[in-house]
Length: 307
Image (cartoon, rainbow, N blue to C red; front, side, top):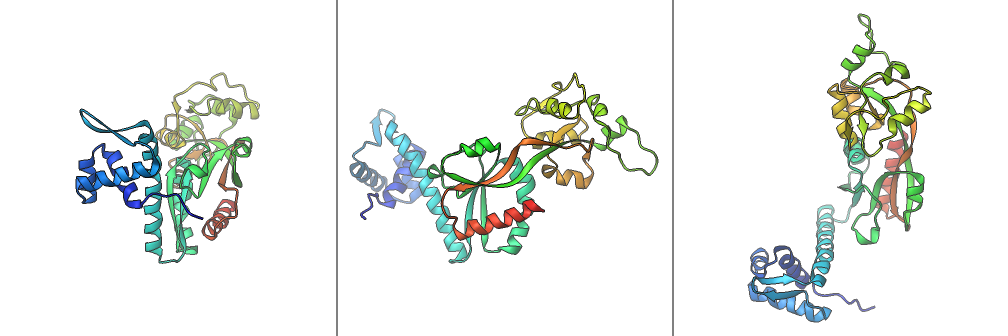
């Protein structure tokens, strides 16, 4: 089958000129003459039958079609370059994965475990970029996504298959100093979790993306908490963790995202009464047979989640 594709050289010239909004600067970047860049872009326009640039008093500017095509070409060239470097680096062994991931889960849970992936699969390299919402895999270069959401959200994501990794249980956590003030301990005794009514009297830290999180927790504990909606709001779990560690209040957080803080003693469980939230963590990939590198990563990830 004949593919209707322009030359890579023409696309590289167009992408550089579109990014710089200048034929001259594109020529300098590509170590070509300005006339060579101009000829390549003219040939590309003739191939497409579409004008990509138009001349104005201030120079060459992109047409609306050129702006849209430029974004697509830039993404394609970036993916081609990345895949080429991966093949060169691995010399046909193993492979690379381009992974979209929610930032806090990637930073606090996945990345600390990647050394174990390297031990089991030294030829697998994982590239990670931030992505918090569903997307069409056909429009990106991602191989898979680590997604945090509800079962309904995953079910409504078109053209994908999803592997449940773990549910998102949340538990109240705070700094040891705050817990000591709420329930003083005796000499030599470890910090003891307090009862839910005691938590209701402590300053609460809220997550702006889950404004009713504390209310749901107190309702599940059957505790009257008039101040369940009060307190400073933070968007990310990572922000909540830092605020709680500095003694600003009690945060409702998944323990899996604060393993380091708990291990260091910066945070302690204020009340050992977890609540299973509606959200869970999934590995999402296109609805087709997984390539060997993704299949190996998925099996390793499932093992990590199980432990």
